[in-house]
Length: 391
Image 1: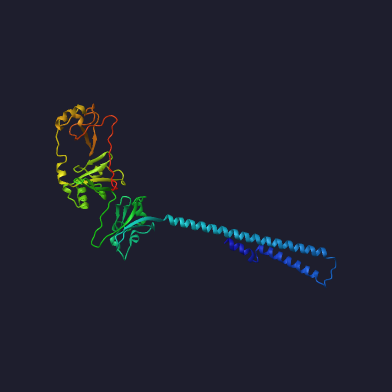
Image 2: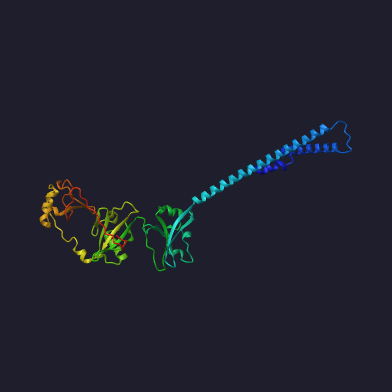
């Protein structure tokens, strides 16, 4: 509107600017007329017109300069307004682009190729208000009812949470991303199934596991396989699922978990996985070692005994009581207290059992080998073979 107004200054005959310019033009034309008349050969001057001619020429020059200055000023105003409007439009476009970018979701999408089965991944940008079915539509290659999205931990290669169409079909991708707690190590996995297959349900309250098979006869530990467990599983349910994954008999299966201080047998403990594994961090992956050897399962921990002692005796006195039963001197074995499926070495020889909260009914575990002396530490040693990259 401002540009049109400025343009109208010269096009509108009733405007003040037009009248000024028109007046200046008339005055210049009048001066030119008198100047031409005075320079004609038949002109009969009444007075000496030399000075008058010079004044007229000077006036024409000044008025031309004023007219050009006014025209340049008007052109500058129009140019400034055009530049200003251009900047406003550019700013509006930047805001529009920024708003559009904020409404877009960048997804790290993984999937198995429907024909070759090869794992492929790419970045996909979609609007946050786009519904889940439109994002998953792969037809005609795979019907949409045989597709679903799964929250995927690509670092540990573990499925975290499934978004089935019957439950999430009315939710937008923005809502899905907020439910998935989308972080740097997570992606969305586009899972497909065959016509006669069913999808496995992945719940949010799951536990990341890595399971390694141990061959006692060969002394070998297999590569760890990722597995997803549920917090409410018992050890027996965990054994059943491990048996399905590794195709082994769960009835003679022993499971030990890796912890900071060593390993702990959880084969026959009660409670759920949440209680047994003491899982605090959902992103933490618990490593389990599985043994499926019937002879080993039957022979391990078969020697048990019940000993009745006073809670007022010291650990040193307890070891004196146990030495004849174990067959080694008190310095030849260590005593461990079992608490919350964890074992803790008891080292204070002069403290009483009651002081160490060892009262009636607790389980103690005895391991051969002397206790550490002052300044000694127990370390783990690993043998690295030149031709084997595994520890």
